[in-house]
Every structure is written in C-alpha cells, then in structure tokens.
Length: 175
Image (cartoon, rainbow, N blue to C red):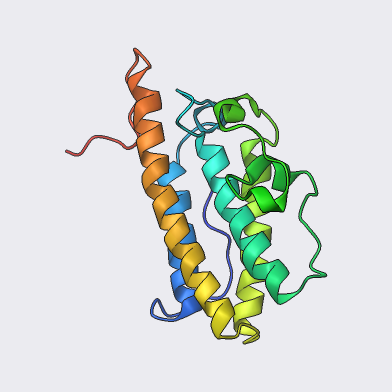
C-alpha cells in the first residue's frame, strides 16, 4: 500500500507546480490503505487495475512532458511504455486492456517508485522554469487526464469490491 506522498518542495496550489502536486497526491490518497492485490486485479475486461491507472498517468507525464522537454531523458524502465500505453498506437505496441489484471509485475511498490521518480523530474522541470507555453498546456492536459483516471480508478475499484462477498470498503465508514 502506498505510504505518505513523496516529500519535496511545497508549492502554492494556484501555480502549475502546486496543481501538479495536488492532483498527483490526490490520486495516491485514493489508493491509500489498499493492498497490492487490491491494486492488481481486474474485475472485468472494461475495467483497469488501480496499479495500472497509477502507472499509466505517470507514463503520460514521462512520455508527453519529460521527453518533449528533453528527448535524452532516460526512461525509468524501457518495458513500461508497452505496459502502460493505452490507446496511443503511434507510440508502439500496447498490452491488451482485458489482460491488464494479469500484470503481477511491476508490483505496487515499484509503481509507486516510478511515480515518485517521474514526479521529482517534473517538479525539477517546473522549478527550473523549463516549460514553455506548449509544455504548460501539456501539463494542464496531463492533469485533466489524471483527474479522469481518478474517476475511472474509483469506478473500477467500486466494481471490483462489489464482486467480493466480504464487501470491502474503499474508506472507513463515517461515524
């Protein structure tokens, strides 16, 4: 299960850097307390595992923001684009959506390490002022994309948990 968000600089929420941190932390908050198993399984072909959502949104920032700003930026793992690309056919082969729940590797801690590494690189890019107007637009698009995946993540987890006769909950019951 994910631990506390990666430590790093604190930014004002109205800045691009602050918004980036807030959206990325919110995604981790949604899976806080879930097990690796909770984040790996897929309840139906039209759903995606939580772990896949976490990695896919990270892949988006790595591919469309970091590599656009610096084509020499090394990939975190050269195997990840195939695993976490969704529908971008021009970027290469993709793992089939109905089989995402079969991906037991990378494990959740490795996906979190991937997120933290890419988050640090994006924060450094922002702190250095190295994003032009097009880069800032890509950042905004990536954040909207991540917010869409937050909704999908919740829907997919709710469907997954509804299949379990133990009826696990995403969050503790309110008093």
